[in-house]
Image (cartoon, rainbow over all chains, first blue to last red; front, side, top):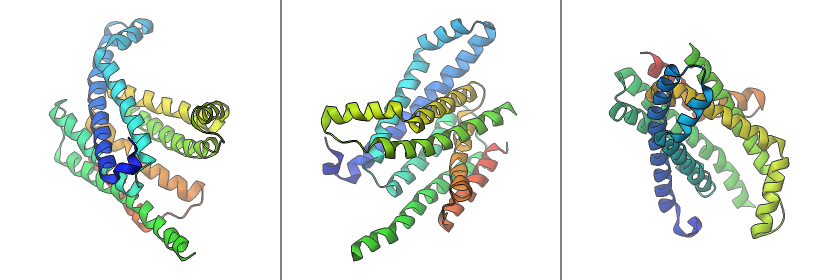
Length: 145
Length: 122
């Protein structure tokens, strides 16, 4: 399937799938790494044992696999999507990760952290839009020639 | 405290990796050929491209710092704090590369900075 032929909306849908894979991967790694830290505390200095435990930990392996899926999809999609379209979706990733931390990992997310997260998401969107604002004059210039 | 040192390592390595990846890919992508020949030349070029090799090394450092942070910090703090990457990127573009950073981007950078400060406040 060529993304060029299916247009930006299905491509944006794939980007949403990539963001979901990234959030799920981060949740898996958060669970797995805390489990690994507890295991390392009970086996001090035994780095090979800890490494083997990590490699055999299904949650850690799934987390890494999901991040690989995210990275491949994201890299491919960015070459087909305008950054100004991709950035607002990418910024949603911050909110999604904090929501996953709160509802899946039972982390305490205070009101200032929610507000801070929203500000970060808006900030990332603005950084994306600034790229579009930068591009416009170049397009107009090309059109004149 | 060690958490914030790891955040600094994560942010700086990620921002540097992006800059080197961008420069390296522009050099590597410019190879002749089609299909498998193009792919083979692309991989051969990438293996000789120091920018790409350093970029991959820095990305690995970024990931290692991220994993280390996940072992003792909340995901809901690490991800917003990781957005400081955009702040470093804008400062690097303005003061290292001498690029013009427009007002919208500075506003975004300010919001991210305030947001990270608020997220870390508790």
